[in-house]
Length: 624
Image 1 (cartoon, rainbow, N blue to C red):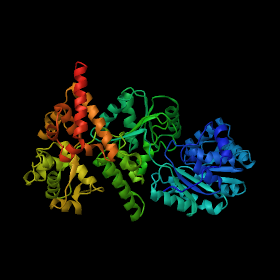
Image 2 (tube, helix red, strand yellow):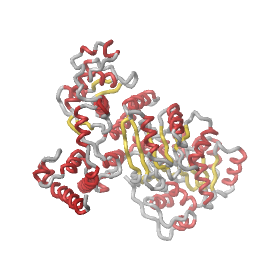
Image 3 (cartoon, rainbow, N blue to C red):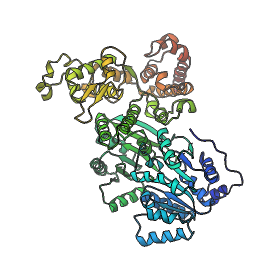
Image 4 (cartoon, one colour):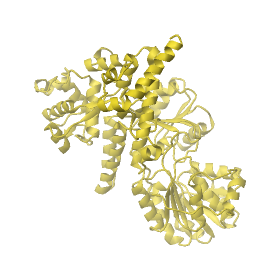
């Protein structure tokens, strides 16, 4: 929750600095309160979305106050970029960092010591040496700003041990206010940062997490190379970032895209520093460059026209995902965040947590954070609602409805009762010994003739072939969603074997139910199940009726926003397709549409029938 603060008094020199130095007529939302608090001499933690102007919140006070502002920053590239920008604004700023030779760093220090500088950027490693701390203790420091402050918390997305040493700053500089800034911190991380840096005495401002210009979408990882190429091909000439889990995959992605004619470059910690710097410079300065990267790339990258962030693998947790997607659309124009994920990603992420050197409590928290991201991937509600809900924001209440800018809002999934199918899957897991992975369970359910099935004698199990009516993609989806809903447990130390949880045991015994979402792109060719073929046939719509379908979707979204519910709660796509195809003319015919019960006839028949009638009249009038 945000702390309350008075705005700046009208006569504050901060307004003049804002206009004269930075060329802005007004502060952005949230900036003025933070600046007022800093100028009042209080320590402050500010959580503000990427692109909202966090840096200005400490740069303006630095120019209003007397003395030197020390800025602690995690990356050389970030320090260099900010100092270069400040110098262009006529601000006396410098940085001392490892990329500069000793003579240059000494010259910067002398300017700071002589009182010439207003801001000095430095890394935590260099600052927290006894020699440097003693030197700064002799200077008139007016403020210490800690950028990317989530790095100080083991609960944050990018913990750096050297940042933890910064908790000594209040003791070393008891009279100097501290200002910490981050775009990525849930409530637990905020409290941890405040406790370490302020010892509970500072104020916290949370100005919101929403990036409304970024559309959100998630898809199951099927053939990641084909999915990546198709995605990038649909966005020619646009600058983007492709995040991969491993260095090898980063190289593969860059080579793949380069082979398709795109200007694509790899970036990871395994490259030598000169090559990394060259690739980053190319990305920052040339249009249409695609950077395939590990998370080593991105923190503090301030390229305004990144049009998309493509996650080829599941990120570590919700905070990491939010931080990484935040590299897109910093110019406020429409941008996209697209993520692929699958069971193998989940297994790898679980394994990374277990291999971490944290204690049991830390690992438990990290597993829960990963659970939240998996739930986000599987959600059938507005993704923006799910994402912001994790950070404590009630998007629906504040905005009056779903966002209309995520894949779920734009193409609402149809969920169905999958309890019987789930029980079949659970039986297959149990009968095969609760030690085989999803691929084998799918083969078992569908009666596959594989070497493993024969060698294990699983073709003699009662469940063998019991799931032939569903295709492989459906069973993979069901197993994945059962895992996400914690009915199944994934063996993260072995080879991804599945076993039942206590909740899974109860579901198998008939206690509870399971609803699942069919993957829209699962059915292909002759292998599609009878049910899938029926769904595909239902989805066929004459091109002349597509404008009506679009109008019905718009009407659905309007009602969804009015009621603060996901669009699919009003009507699923199948219902709208039937309306567009059959064009019911009265309430009796409307009641025959798939998914339309009495309450929906009562609440929605009139406006939807009117929309259909208007379409028919316009078509006739237009000679269609």
